[in-house]
Amino acid sequence: MLAVAGMLSVQLGSALSVGLVAELGPAGTGWLRLSAGAIVFLLLARPPLRSLTRRDVGAVIGLGVATGGMTICFLAAIERIPLGTAVAIEFLGPLTVAAVRSHSARALTWPGLALVGVVLLTQPWSGRIDPVGVGFAGLAATGWASYILLTQRVGDRFTGIQALSLTIPIAALTAAVVGVPQAVGHLEWAMLPAALGLALLLPVLPFALEMLALRRMTPTAFGTLMALEPAIGVCLGLLLLQQTPAPVQVVGILLVVVAGAAAQYGGRRALDEGAPTGPPSEVDLVA
Image (cartoon, rainbow, N blue to C red; front, side, top):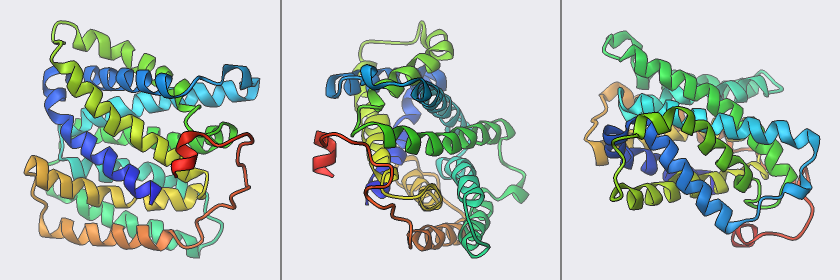
């Protein structure tokens, strides 16, 4: 439930970002949204700087950079290709995580089924897909794969959303490298409330929910469960952006939903496996 709620928030935030992307560009939108998210996380939780070890620094920085890069690349993708298609391509990242981390041939059945669904959703045979948009979605897939692995590692070290008060500011700084130059001259005060609202939908709410989910699931189960994202993306693209899927894409949606549901079996982690020590945070208590 944590993972599904996070996915809904991600796709809603992505769909509603399309208008801001048209005004600020994907990098400018990503930087503004991550900056607003960083402020929210810093207000909610104090960065656990005293608890950082040398082994933590690389994972925390890596997660922040991966988050920033993934955000910009995905926004650049949905600027050029439909939301559902971009999500389907981006799903190849967690699909790879699920396949690599599987320990049996039978476990590869569900990522394989999801891959068929992704192909049906993207329809590479149609010849109408923007190659640049596909390329950005592919880069976002790489960032998503790194995000999954690093989020579990960082989430196991720190309680609740403390880690996000470290990684999201790093993500905002990463996005600022290309986002600030792109946004200069186009940013207006009226855009700030919209950016804050989008930041709550993505990254604040979903990243917190996903970190909590990854403390309770294996990367394989979580990665394959993300197969639901293309279906959610297609549905929200239809409802909010009038991006109507073809019949063959509906078949693809059904395949990825089946794969995502089947992957949940046996995916829960032992609650004491890798769980951080210390009292629970407010988010832990709510969850």
